[in-house]
Length: 172
Length: 191
Picture (cartoon, rainbow over the protein chains, first blue to last red):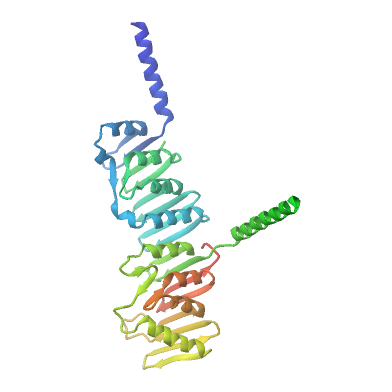
């Protein structure tokens, strides 16, 4: 009996250590007013991948047939951006809004600020290039998408900051 | 003999490497668009893109408008073939004032000066509601028009024109509408 418990305990410990070492997607929602709350949803990508085993094959695909016409150009654009030096590519500023698109290192960074709301998005170009290479002419496999997300360097990838709520999606 | 072959191969390899290094060091052109709209509610926009991106973007534009990087002008009264014939005549005439149109409140002038075609349009503001005089300044290199009209019959070759733009530096289009300003230029700077 003792041996069985030790084996089960070791397996749980091994699984825990393995999961902790693999990338997680963490969604944080922090609300300040009127009812302050904080919720954090950590999602280990390994579990998401395992869950795909129970999903119908068709449902494990994201169909975008329209992309087929532009996939070559999309790949070229991403490659050109990746090769380009760091630069501010677009800046639109008005009285109540500001949009900035910049290339910073391997990332395409999009910052939008409008009437008290801010959106920050970081798109790693190398991962985007990798994702596009998985396109089969009709769709992306969700498992490939998970691989790409798992390869993103740790840090925030999306942050939406409103007057009383902050939503963050990060890779940890 | 082997030594000579090796020497030639080494020289070729070093030359190829040197050419690649020079190419890599040459700054690639960037296209810039600046829109300035002064005033409290005005908007300002700046776009800085590697020119190579514009070439790729051309391919993304709908096939209905473009066919292999060329614009169809079937619905227009003037065919590209006609424009091409006129252009040949104008080009052969050297530096000249191609068009001068003067009306009460509008003036259009198209001239060729050296390797440039300059198009100037000036229009006076209308009444109190109008924000001011309009001024359009377009500078087009002769080689750009050559490239644009170098395609098949009734097609404008946009890809060839863009390729020509990679050699271009400086202002391409300036539009001043009262205090609003739109400027498009190409240089080696990224901002």
